Image (tube, rainbow, N blue to C red):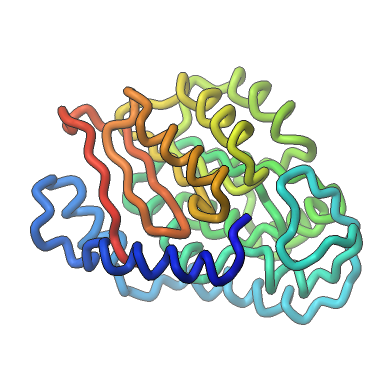
Length: 265
């Protein structure tokens, strides 16, 4: 993984070369709509409060949890015991990203949502509340952490989430075999090139014109950057958006020529 100063240098280059996120000069109607109506939607949705109240409770939770790290490892902790509040502080996705994922799901209304990396369920809650009749399947490798997430969903009244415990390498294929299609997938786990590219290949047969894939931490390491380049180059990918910390992939046939955008967010 890159050091903090390497990430900072990369972000500076990205900031200087990316578009300003206002949609000006964007020729694709789809991308213009995404930027203006989803990316830059500043409205406050009441569901935000539900999830952020949950985050606040978790930040103050001193319960110790066993962590089975099946991916590239934690940046800030090498122990297999971590406090719930520390996980909420360092591993849970930011409010900004969670709310963007909420808006994407709310706008495009996918019926089937997959998440690789439940953690404490903060991001999962955003995904679920954006479309409460969707089928949301989320995977978590650490049983203690998954149990906390299930408890959080129950306490917040969320009922459309199916939590699967185990290694993504063995879980994902079996889950996909039971689905006809996937409308939205958030891949946030095992930050290595080979598994990330494999998850992408396994998801591909379930993609349709309206499907959206979101990959987290695409500039986290040289491996993740290589995986992102491989994913962008795949013939089925018609459009991609680099938000630096997150990458979005679209399969829409209206993009007759492959397009890639770097947009400040």
